[in-house]
Length: 136
Image (tube, rainbow, N blue to C red; front, side):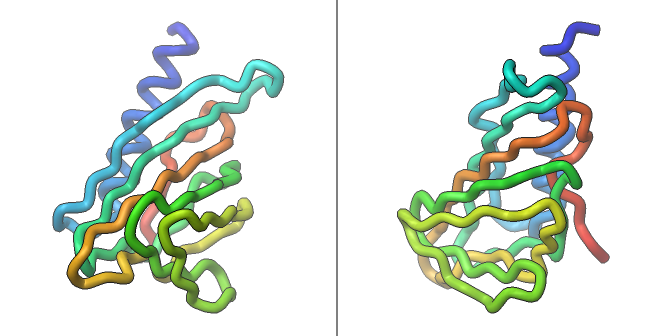
């Protein structure tokens, strides 16, 4: 099987898993970019856009164990709690990064009236199957 086909299948599965980890309302997850990183064998870069409806939130979740993540708020405001850090609201134009052991106990749109959108960029092992896994 060609490498690009494997990556495409992995991203499709990851997008479905990522979307499934969110609440069932109007949230949308769209893959914006994917590529193997040519100077780091076995690593890929995947970017997804996440749109939260007003008041919408994600279930508690983790990300692929090999993933280093950079997230940038495009519009609105995202309220976030990762690991033992304090809860924080990130507004449009602000960003954060996450370590390999990040657990999201809170990830939601901080507004009850306006949508919010973020871009999440993952650097991860090319063979990781899911970007996001819900925690029960």
